Length: 284
Image (cartoon, rainbow, N blue to C red; front, side):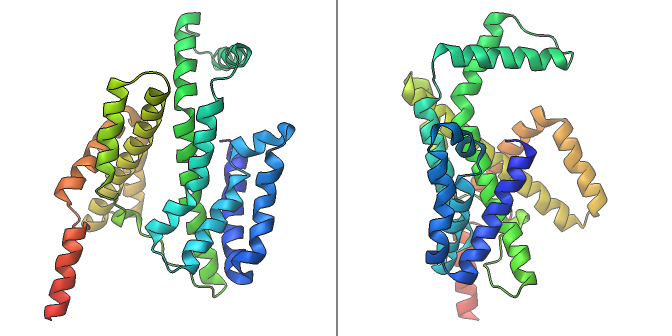
């Protein structure tokens, strides 16, 4: 997703959410759906793929959850539904005719040549293209999920300045996946090993999304550790930069940390810990 499209999507999410809170969900619902309806036209389908069309729907769904009194995790879960719909649509259409693949191949070759990189042979390039096309739905969903989370945080910051109430988003250091996500990981790996064709592509995209979420949970653990140690912000940014520069191995380590946190619950944020805290409060 280009930077300008990303910024526009974030602005649309925040504006729609704030507008729905101020003027009501029903008044904002129709204008929020207009970009999506326009994107159904052939020449404007790029608006849908770029994320601009689903952005107002994301903000609208977030506003509905806020109106229902839902927590931050439930708000984001429903707000990410447009991303899920986009991913499913891409899975049904991404195969495309051979000329689309050839056009993409030519674009990648041209980009690599302009950067002075070594262009792989035709067979290797085709394998890269096939992999990109297969995983594109999962990447599209992750981008929409990112837009939902960051857009909500922007709306939360703006709402505080204009005396509007929104549920406080969960701090990064306290972010934790639902424990049931582990079964999605196991199931997608099983489908990936057993099936071929469409089910295999579906499993690969689900696996991509879940692994990425566990990487984020691992990053949340790092953020929590730095917060507990009282590390200064500058040094914290340096650590994040090092993680980016070593993205290959750091992603693996963060993913493993996030996965192990499902069982060890190092930050004591799981349901069992919450129940124990509630029992202690009742006894007191």
